[in-house]
Length: 273
Image (cartoon, rainbow, N blue to C red; front, side, top):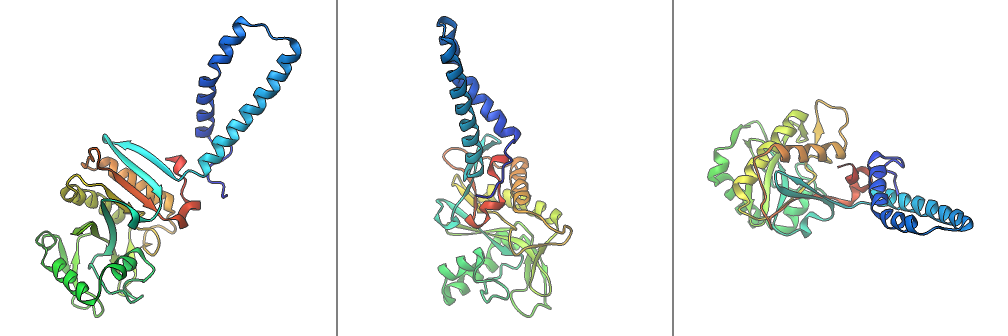
């Protein structure tokens, strides 16, 4: 087990003290009315100390093993948990590049990426052509076009504004990364924040009372031009923060969920949130 939560974390101590305050009420009332012999008082003190230590260690271990947390933001519940995005109910978000490329060739789209898995598992060649046509003809996406790159020799040429969303069945396809001349995904941190804000606005337009599950967007192959190293925990905080300042409100039973792949378990501290 990797230690993500320090042994003497303020949150762990606070939780420990809260539990002690609750469970100590009954013994306190009992000993007010009952006098305990001296030898039993010593035994009681030893047992109590051991119980409190065990309780503290248990809280600390559970904090390090935490796999799910629920935050209440804007009167909506946002669930953050580890799991498989494709196993979730409702709408599921898949990140694309700014061209909505669909060519899985390990040059434009990697087979092992969430994007590549989605395309490979759900579309044959003819279905990919149909998807490309639907994206190109979508009225809303036409209003989100951001120029044409005629010099691009591999992949599509029409760019879309970052954060633009195309609804395809139970999936929300979102343009979320820029592609440089070497077809490498890149963003600035400012663009990441702006993309997330725009994304939430798009979700607000589309979701129609359905639950929405999103991956830890921008984690993995995306490169950040203005920072040397950004950790998954920091990206998670940005996603939560942009949800907080967005206008979207999920009303019961609809929820927003951030689904984190198990491979990132050692890098994400849900207890901190």
